Amino acid sequence: MVSHYIYDRSRLYQWNWLGAVVKRNPASWANIHAGLDQTSEALIRLFPAAQRRILNVYVPAEMNESSIARARRHIETAAAPEKADPRALPLKNCECDTVFLLFVAHELRRREARLQFFREVGRALNPSGCVVLVEHLRDWKNSLAYGPGALHFFSRREWLAVGSQAGFNLANELRITPFVGCFVFSKNPSS
Image (cartoon, rainbow, N blue to C red; front, side, top):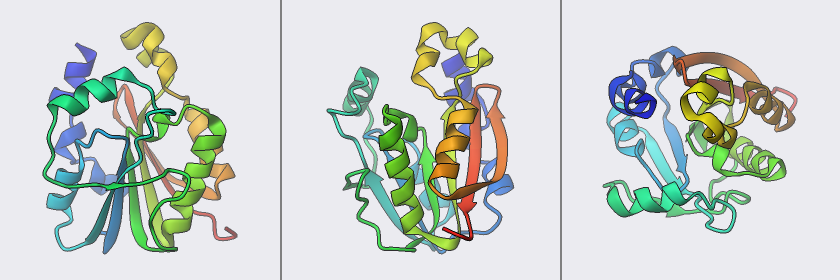
């Protein structure tokens, strides 16, 4: 019931929360997903004039979540992604105003892999750009809703630590639902 509420009934895919975190329309953006893309088409509709890159960083050996494989068999998307390595994204330095990481970063299970991924995202982000990270959080609400499945998520503290270690500042934060958080990171001026 919680998943139905989050993905079918909440404001998550209505996108009305996005204006609160992205203050200006990006001229160029990248949406990075892990094999299951349920957001690029909406982002294209929201920012039709922007240059865009859609990257699929699904690595079966590292991202062995069976639900991704099952969902990929049932969902078709019109936006064709580029296959990408999360350790070496095919983006130029400072190419993007905004990078969207919507339910993708938690699939990198090892902290070092997440940190390397965030550093790559930072390399591709222009100095005044932002990263929009949307994730379930490992907290009491998700623990009640998902039981042991909440261990697949990471805590707020972990996301802030990885962001900081990768050279980002927390620019904004909100809860899209009681179960899903959004963090907006900007580049640290000294990075």
